[in-house]
Length: 257
Image (tube, rainbow, N blue to C red; front, top):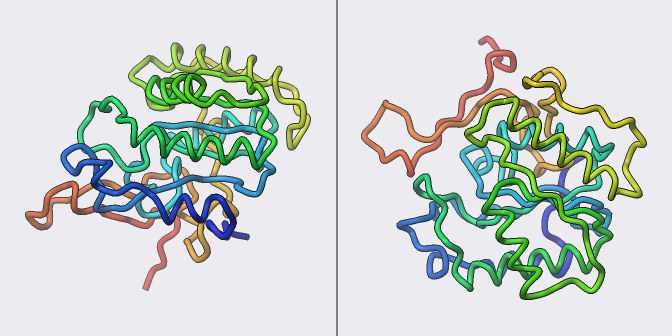
């Protein structure tokens, strides 16, 4: 079970025509790691479209977005909605940010994001769009202004999975988002009673592993796990942090030799 990739239109063409450093300048984006397009279903079966912010270290290695801690939290959010397969995720930025502050989108950057959103909506049956974070929320708002979909879609705005808030504040926001999303989904993968988050993260429940069918063929199973296995840079050589990602197999998955 693995993601077959971008073998169908219009997504194959969108990947082939992906904007490069002329659209994503190197002083603000880590373009040397390449564009990271999506995670989830592109076959028209997605009921939920998730919009995140930008890919991080785990994503650069796994070649799918939202694979780190933020991704596992989002996976847990979807699981509470009874959605364990029928979703698709894209980011507000195609490349990883270089720096801590997200720049204002240029029109070329937005046009590419609009093309992806439009393709997903027109080839599928999305009922709910969940935006995680202010940057994602702005992209969706701009999309509605520029290319309003023929069939209205419910939007649910939630704070970013790793927002600088207390756990109680973040999870209170997510509980409200769950209520809105749950009411708008007519065809979940599983009909489950909605169970809200507590005041603190419960990693045994709230961090849900990335399914193998979301990842490219051949990736080891530990890359789908919730442990941190990729960090930018290291101290072994004078290489800029932006130019190195250190990957370490989690201890539980190492082989003694």
